Image 1 (spheres, rainbow, N blue to C red):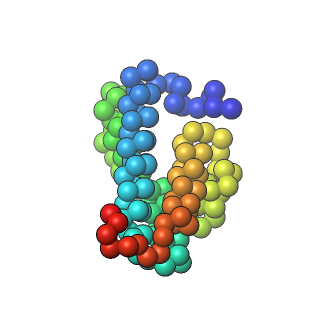
Image 2: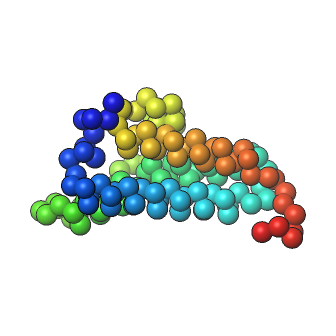
Length: 130
């Protein structure tokens, strides 16, 4: 399924670096969501999940491009961020309809993880539990 993915054009070191970057970004987004959702009602937690997902989909290409600047010689220094994604693009990512590549499927998985976190995060937490 992913045999034609551009990930496979990277060296082993490039692949490891890309995996580390992706895992780091995912963890940072999930930690931000966890903290922002604390003590909020479900509707607000879902809104936070959607906004964080939108921000990730919108802004992460610049982070990845910066990584590619490091590993590939001769890439021009440029801004690759365009207009924010619309609701249909986000929905296509969430339902894995936006391409059969690791990037699109990873974004879709992140969207579902954020919604799951919103659903599982308790509305009110005891003060003595941290």
